[in-house]
Length: 233
Image (tube, rainbow, N blue to C red; front, side):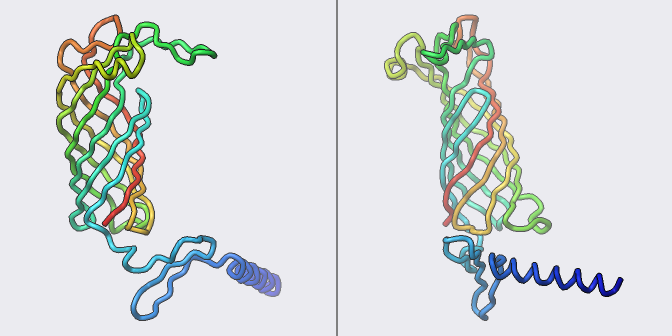
């Protein structure tokens, strides 16, 4: 029995050494001045201490996937102590009425049978983000909660003409809004921003904004999965 266990242990050691020789694990080297993290399968530069230090400033863009379609945005943030971040966020997305009736045709694509106007929301949110479990989770996964509020520009453009004509002859209305969110950022390298944020917008609308011919809209609320890409400095 002892011989069998010893034989299995030897085989395990041989397999481990072979895997280490072929692939090379992620490792750290301490030369007395800096720690270098390398991945032999990656063509990217090695990470040193400078790459691991949190940056105070960050900026980038957002790609939004929501109940009403897609959206885009941009952000700027300033971090205090690697846990609290104050940020501003500007985005652009369409707000659709739940009563909108869409018809899909193979040749012409999606047609909205009862749509009168396109309604776009452009919120400028100022918010705060708090990192969770800083001392309990490995540093390449940084979960957070966030919330924000601010003014919202609603832009209404006719859907009865072609898109660009309707957009150029649209008009604006103003309101306010807020959101709450939960997300995470990824990666050891603090010189860039890569994350995902699930957000719910709450945006009440002023009277008279109409998207479909059945009546006016009461709100431009929306649920979004937001992908964040940017750099830190």
